Each structure stands twice: as C-alpha cells, then as structure tokens.
Image (cartoon, rainbow, N blue to C red; front, top):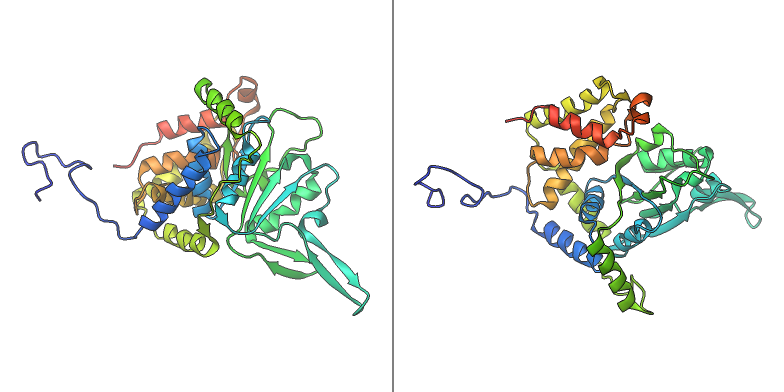
Length: 337
C-alpha cells in the first residue's frame, strides 16, 4: 500500500503497479523491434504500422487504400521482411484468371494422372497489389481462402499453412480499368487502412532518406524478427486477453447503432462485432495490457467498420464519409463505467 497516495486518497496508474496474468514482455519486445525496423524506411504512419501489427496478432486481413506513391506496397514488403515466413506478391490485372492465383491441375504424361500445381496464394503473407483491377470472377477466388484458410479445387480441399495473412492495396482515385470490390469480399478484411499524404516535415525527411540511400535498396538492412511459430504463439496469447461483459455490450451497441443510423444505407454484420473484439485485444496487447479498455475498442472501431457499412446515397452526395459517421456513433454510444 506504500504506492498509494495517502495524502490525496487518489489511486493513479503511476502509483499502482498492475501485474498482468499473461506474460506479454516477449511480444512487446518483438513488436517494438519490428516498429523500429519499419521506421528506418517509413516516415510517420505510426497508426498504420500499429494496425498492421494488430492485424497479424488478430489473424486478420488488411486492405490498404491510398493514392499512388504513399508507400502502400513498400509497407507490406517491409513487414514481410521482418517476418521469417513465406511471402508472395500477386499483381492483379484485368486479364488475371482464378487459376493464376489458386493454381491448376495439369495432366502428367508419365503417370497419366492430373497433378495440382499450387498457385502463389499458397504462402503465409500474400501481397495483392491493386486488388480492384481484377474482375469479379478473380476476386471471388479469394472468398474461401480468406475466410476459411483453405482452397477447394476439383473437389479436393487444400489447407493453407498458418499463419496466413492477405494484405491488399487499392487506389481510391483512379477508376479506369478497375472493378469495385463486392461487400462480401470487403467483409473478409479485418481492417481497411486509409493512408494519407505525409506532412511537410515528413516529406522533407522522406526526400533526405532517399538522397542518402543512393544505390542501396530500401529493404537491404531490414532484419528478420519473428518466426512463424512465434507468430502463432502470440496469436494464441492475444485470444486470452480479458474483455469484461460491459465492454462486450459496448461493442454490440456500436455495431447495432450502425444498423439503425439514418445516415447509413447498410449497417455492419455480426462479423464486424467479432472483428472489433479481436482487434481490440490486439491493441491491448501491443500496449502491454492483458485486458481491453474502451479506448482499445474505439481505436479498433473505425478501421474495422468503415469498409463494412454503406453511406446513404443522399449523404454520400453531401461528401459525408463512413469514417465520419462511425466517429459520430462512437461519440454517442455511452462508454461503460
């Protein structure tokens, strides 16, 4: 009781040491090391890096959206370089076929049997560049693999090795030669992360670093930090993080509010509630806590919900975005005490 301020009678985070039931120290050390490695190349974008790490810990897929040149692809490559797991990059184009992603059966003349040749999706971390450039048939090929981590070809199911994470990029501005992602596919992404332009001081630092690099590659000095086994272990730890009943109800109220909001044509599904739950555990973990707080839920809500809801047409014409509406919903839903 010596740590309690007996004069004022107040108990604060500074004078009380909370002991965690789960040992998150190795996880935190690895997370901080990965951040430092990525920040040697990426300037700013701290929120994006946190969200990418939470997605890995929560075993969820990520959609990166931003105009060309804001480091969407390089961010995914950097993350892959820090992880000792399989990595595949697939450039989506209008002529890309499902078999180009999943693989195909080829007739073997030696044994007169068909053999399945695995496609690039059979890896651990998949970077899909410009996902909205492929037609609906090719995009639909990702439905099963993203949700169930398996592929069914010619009646045979092939399980993908864990961990399995898809990071897809798309350009929100250029519309020529693009195909809008259907709601069913968007719902399979844990996060939609919007990457904005850097600030002036960040832009100057980007130019300085590029000038200093000269002939050296951006990824050359990046160290490998995490193995596949460690990722799976940390994903298991994150699942054990505590969430009080009143916080579960808080998540449900936020999601239900999206279905009743007059500004939204389509609200979020129960899958969104589960996504907020899992993501808030991830945010708690990278903050070193074995319990979720309302702030973790708030931090998870916008990237989880903004691509799962549809703004009413009249509000969209007024320039109101889904993220703005979700912010309003979060502000109106009472925080549990």
